[in-house]
Length: 352
Ligand code: HEC
Ligand code: HEC
Ligand code: HEC
Ligand code: HEC
Ligand code: HEC
Ligand code: HEC
Ligand code: HEC
Image (cartoon, rainbow, N blue to C red):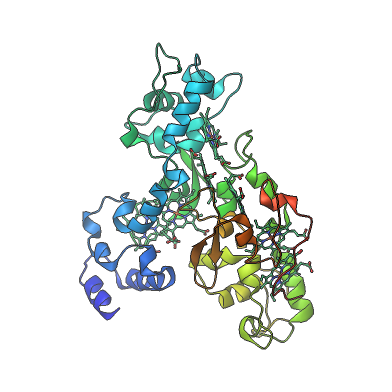
């Protein structure tokens, strides 16, 4: 760290305040998760939007994931199901589907900017203005898939400017605010913006995984009065409520520990829970979010488990292995697994 400080101190661009923020962020994120310090000193040589320069690990995970490989799928479906239609008809016709918005929103920023129709025609081949069974992907090097800046609004990024989680909405070519990770996912995996058959978010929203905060508050008030967050997590009868009820809450407000999260999201008096303990900062509480079970930078058919103690994702070999991290029994045969159970679980270390 001392070496790093000296190096950073030599850079004329970074002020001391941002250096401290960066060093703190490294401690939280872990160096392997983001850039190495050497790269930051090169900030003046970097185009503001070259995410991979400083976030090579994330870029590598992402480029091997479903979000990093969307163009061929769209080309195939346009050829198979939209033969004879113009881009305008695909987007606005009898069976409208905005492939651009969900599969490659940044396509409208290419060149001097394109409309969505122009983007569809630019990136997928047509003959006489219509898609055919021979339609294929074009200009593949420029297609950005579900890229970094679809989900992160990075205004004039420097390490000291915090990017904001947002959705780049191609119909308006502007960022729109989202309340958190799950609502971000729901822009494409749910009906928040479009009438679609991808309804994972809608299912999640109606499940208990999306409403966990009040239960924890009630239980802290009923069973943990007089204890500090530290006592609850590490005392005589330890129970890590955060790990199971809202693991990604440790990412809130710039990042925090599980202990801090317990004190941030549930009220204390004099540092202790009381019979009056209730919920706090509810609009930042993530519940059991999409990214508690899926690595947002490496989504694929198998889930991942976000371990709030380490702040790292753990790859899961199956859905059941995932459930077992929080439920002591597995659930069988689910469609989307979240919705099919009827409370046959039970918590391993649940503080009830
Ligand atoms: C010059 C190096 C550099 C470049 C280029 C860069 N980043 Fe960063 N980024 C950092 C550093 C260092 C941090 C950690 C310090 C901080 O949080 O400010 C960071 C943090 C972040 C964070 C986490 C912020 C938070 O709230 O904790 C996100 C998200 C992010 N970058 C996204 C991006 C995206 C997307 C791009 C490309 C558009 C990008 N970055 C380009 C260096 C860079
Ligand atoms: C509302 C957002 C949305 C729109 C609009 C949309 N897609 Fe998708 N598409 C998705 C999502 C999300 C997936 C991942 C599906 C999953 O696994 O749940 C997907 C998956 C796919 C797949 C992969 C195969 C499959 O069915 O799982 C193809 C092919 C595809 N879309 C083509 C298209 C085409 C072509 C259009 C436009 C005509 C389009 N999509 C419009 C969100 C969208
Ligand atoms: C589908 C949306 C999505 C895409 C695409 C995406 N991210 Fe993220 N990113 C997220 C979410 C969600 C988080 C976690 C923030 C939270 O839950 O509060 C995150 C967190 C981060 C962080 C901070 C934590 C960490 O993992 O180090 C960085 C840095 C980051 N993203 C960079 C990138 C870069 C670089 C890319 C492109 C290679 C990218 N992201 C693509 C959604 C996305
Ligand atoms: C801008 C639209 C968009 C957003 C936002 C988005 N996704 Fe996706 N996602 C897609 C598309 C499109 C695909 C399918 C790509 C393909 O197969 O061609 C996909 C695929 C996936 C898959 C893989 C499905 C499979 O069977 O392989 C998972 C898991 C996933 N997304 C999770 C997430 C999570 C978690 C978030 C929020 C952090 C998120 N997505 C946000 C568009 C989006
Ligand atoms: C190992 C994971 C885990 C830990 C740790 C954990 N819980 Fe739970 N909790 C669960 C699961 C899973 C459920 C849902 C069980 C079910 O309904 O079958 C649950 C349900 C609950 C409920 C729902 C109401 C009820 O009685 O069914 C309350 C309240 C609750 N937990 C409070 C807490 C509190 C407070 C803590 C920390 C002191 C905590 N839990 C720690 C996993 C956990
Ligand atoms: C409690 C954990 C959990 C949460 C929360 C969760 N998922 Fe999943 N998800 C899974 C598991 C497990 C699978 C794999 C299902 C299987 O075995 O095929 C899955 C599958 C998926 C798939 C693949 C296609 C499908 O439907 O089978 C997508 C896309 C997806 N999830 C997106 C999301 C989004 C978006 C959210 C938030 C709205 C979310 N998930 C929340 C556990 C979760
Ligand atoms: C990160 C921890 C976590 C994971 C992983 C997880 N759950 Fe849960 N689950 C919970 C918590 C916490 C609750 C209780 C929420 C409450 O009642 O406040 C819950 C509740 C449920 C419920 C509702 C129980 C009831 O009493 O109605 C079902 C069903 C369920 N989970 C299924 C699953 C399945 C299936 C998986 C694996 C795909 C899974 N969960 C993975 C934490 C988790």
